[in-house]
Image 1 (cartoon, rainbow, N blue to C red):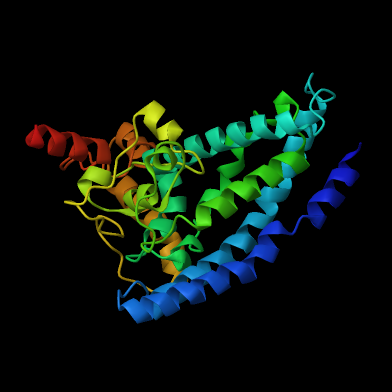
Image 2: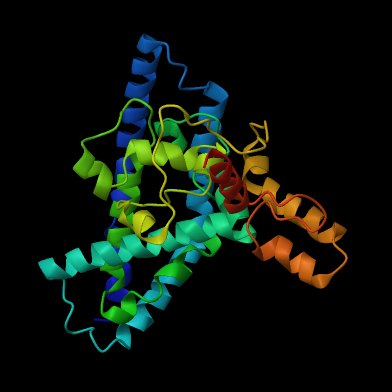
Length: 304
């Protein structure tokens, strides 16, 4: 099979595009329920920013996705397993775990490397938790996203399989952006990413910062020490630790890049300049260390 075949297959894959009307229908249902229950889960301006971010992200992602496809194709071509993995049922199961594992580290890096955070932060800028927020995707993160999946084609998985797995994972993540679903039965909460787990991820409470990076499976967070349970005594407060208070999509998409540039300019040493780019958000060369792990460690020490 040549690259033209795979390009034709990807061109026919309209899973995410076909899902958009369903997403919007679910948003309308949640808005209706919200109005009936008077929970104030939505803000009209905030929702339109989220919808705008979905459109902008789709445009920005086109070229990186095309380049990623080409890279995936040629990596698959040199894989010694390319003729072993041929869409068997067990291969799809392995790919599900491999894709979700890659997503975990991509997502975690977005929170622990400030340059990556600048591309991801739009998704966390909403002070509301609803299905509309799921559409508020990070724009800049599309530029580095696919690097975290480059190892998978070397295992014999072709680009069509990989892009389909990534799309299904993204579809799954839509439903966890809601306050209308309480905690689910314990076996489900232990294995899967759920609305409860993802509310924690979107919270600005110190206890919850940089936790629950799961795509579909919460097991990675449990294994690698980034899991936090939603506590009834510490209800999630959504948004950023310092909210930007803007409904301008362009500013929402780019504000953290500007903040990084300002910090780099005011640092004298090159080592500090680089730390502002590659250390976690909250690090400062001349002020308090407000990185999530530092703040959370202090909080838990105080509680102990």
